[in-house]
Structures are given as C-alpha cells and as structure tokens.
Image 1 (cartoon, rainbow, N blue to C red):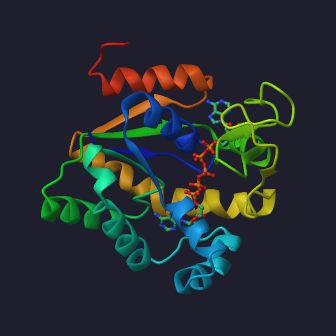
Image 2 (spheres, rainbow, N blue to C red; image 1 turned 180 degrees about the vertical axis):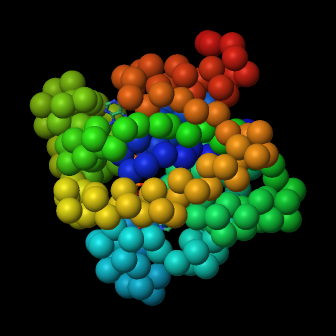
Length: 219
Ligand code: AP5
C-alpha cells in the first residue's frame, strides 16, 4: 500500500506517518527529513537547500523529484510507503504519477489532514524531537511520559528545528496556500482524495486515517 499525507506545516503529517509506519509496516518517506539530513551531512544538495529551508520557502521541484525517485527504488519501499511532505506543487504531483507508472507502482490513498491556520503556529513552536531516534513530541500536546526521557528509546537529548520560529512558519504557511493547496483539486479530480479532521486529538486522527486505509472498517 502506497499513500500520500497532505496538509499544511504542523498538520500532523509526520506524527501520523510514524504511527502508520508502526501499525501497517510501511516506510515513511519525509522529504523534509531527507533534506535536513543532507544539510546536516553538508552534501552538495544540503549546501544548495539550506538557505531556502531556513527561509521557509520551497526547494526547486527538480531537486525533490530526483531525490524521491531515487529513494523509492530502495528495497524497503517494496513493502509500501507513506509520502510525507511530497508532492508539494503541481509539477511534483504530475512527476509522481509518471514516476510510479514507470516503476510499475500505484498510489492507493491520498489523505489530507486539514487544520485551521491559527492552531498551526502553536503546534509548530511547541514541537521537539528525540535527537537519538527522531520520535516527535510537543510541549503541550504530546509530552514524554517521563520528563526529559524519550518514550521510544530512552534518549535524553532533544532538538528543535531551525525553521520552527513564528516568522518562518508564516512564510511556510504562505507557501502551502500558494503552491501546495492547489494540488488538492488534482487529486479530487482523480477521486483519490480523502479528508480527515486534523483538529481532533492525535489518537482520533489516527483512527480516522485507519478507517480510510482499512476501507471503512475500523480496527
Ligand atoms: P517539512 O519537514 O515537510 O515540514 P512541513 O511540511 O512544514 O511539515 P511539518 O514537519 O512542520 O509538519 P507536520 O505536518 O509533519 O507536523 P507534525 O506531525 O510534526 O518541510 C520543511 C522544509 O523542507 C520546507 O519548508 C521546504 O523548504 C522543504 N521541503 C520539504 N519537502 C519539500 C517538497 N516536496 N518540495 C519543496 N520543498 C520541500 O506535528 C507538529 C506538532 O504538533 C508536533 O509537535 C505534534 O506532536 C503536534 N501534533 C500533531 N498532531 C496533533 C494533533 N492532532 N493534536 C495536537 N497536537 C498535534
């Protein structure tokens, strides 16, 4: 099963992708994580995209499309994947269709996690991640069970993203509305788009997504 999670910054794409990974045995493909990895490793791509990401703008389509096309060829994707943060423009959505057809793969679900803009700033500014395993948390909405200790791996170091400032979030939201939201009709026309209420709690959103993935039957 291959699926796309769509939604604005902070909608919960990464949070839900981590849960789907565990429940359905799929691989999370986050273009944001891949790019942050390239920046941290100071690769050629990393050097090219750092300024763009820090500003909250979108990285050029060609860079992203090549990166995803190469990643989908890895053996682990044969078990199915969750696209998190891709596609983000109409050219990316069109390129994905061509890419999947060439590789003999299909897209089974496109799920939009919808959330009002006002909530997103609070969600993003409160986000932090385990530096060791990457598990995601929130100061208010998803705390660690024991203060300062990762529930998943016991790690005690956490990090916050450089682009999670209120100023950059405004630019990221503008980019979402101007460049990403226009791809929703693309998937609507193909009758693939399903919407879930991202304003609900993390557990409730997970249940709504499971209902879509299980074809209506809740586990
Ligand atoms: P990327 O890393 O993809 O960031 P994003 O789309 O801005 O999404 P986020 O990761 O911020 O949000 P999310 O929806 O995953 O929310 P999360 O689950 O963490 O992209 C970063 C940058 O890379 C872009 O700006 C761009 O420069 C570049 N880039 C990446 N892909 C690109 C592409 N395809 N094309 C061009 N450029 C690209 O949740 C947020 C917080 O809220 C968490 O703390 C979580 O605990 C909490 N939370 C989640 N759900 C709920 C809930 N239901 N209730 C309460 N709290 C919740």
